[in-house]
Length: 343
Ligand SMILES: [Zn+2]
Image 1 (cartoon, rainbow, N blue to C red):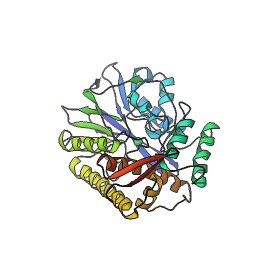
Image 2: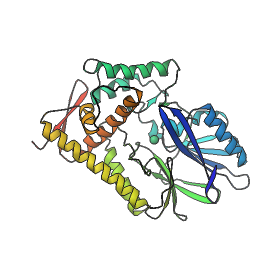
Image 3: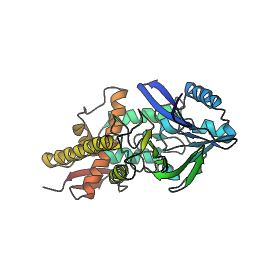
Image 4: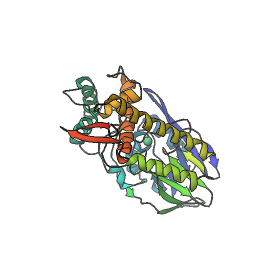
């Protein structure tokens, strides 16, 4: 555990499955008997829980005085939330994170997402008739989750207190405002300390990565929301120290944000070109495989996970192009087909 700022501690959790993944969990102990804060819960993993318990006891934090602020409902951020809740902690999250039960990236086993999964897969062009091999890979995950065999991106439910934009939270010597970080997910939230110029930025801005704008639902304008949020980073949060959930803290906000903006603009333009030059209608999966240089059928689990991410990013970019009248979307049998509007 390291101290990032006075009274702000960081514990880095890692987990090995298909490659190593890491997350930074932040802890802010409360003053004299007041409540303490944990930002994000970490992977659902016994070793990770043991590591966090050591960190909590080091800082004399007990569960009955602990609030866990879950920035968004992804497996690495919310995995241990149900355990912490059972041990007596209070979980805080934006209820909008329960908006969907299935989004192509994550399988939320909280509810029964079967119907939603069929619908989402069909919409991006994955069907038992046209892409049986890929369809079967998704069904295999469903079986694993149902039989309780576990799956890396599985998300379980937990009780939580709803937090809203603008709400103020005090822990230690810090006073935070709950701020929206729309884009990576629909309802992702961060914590902003205006006086001290600190922002817990979750997965919105990460150094060395282009974060996924992970939507597979039509008309949610998530990429437009993400780009607007990045613009806010260039203005409101430009002189902040960002404490992201992955990789290192960020001081030069402008450099990191501009790199992400550049990467998205490049992909959007590439997809516009793909549809323009192909002169036919294509599904999200087809555009994504070309844009990201992927084969038709994933060769292994790693490729399969990449395809899921690619389809989410591609959906976001195509929606963005459609909002600008550059592509047309039509729907047949639950599948969206995209074509250039410039022909
Ligand atoms: Zn995430």
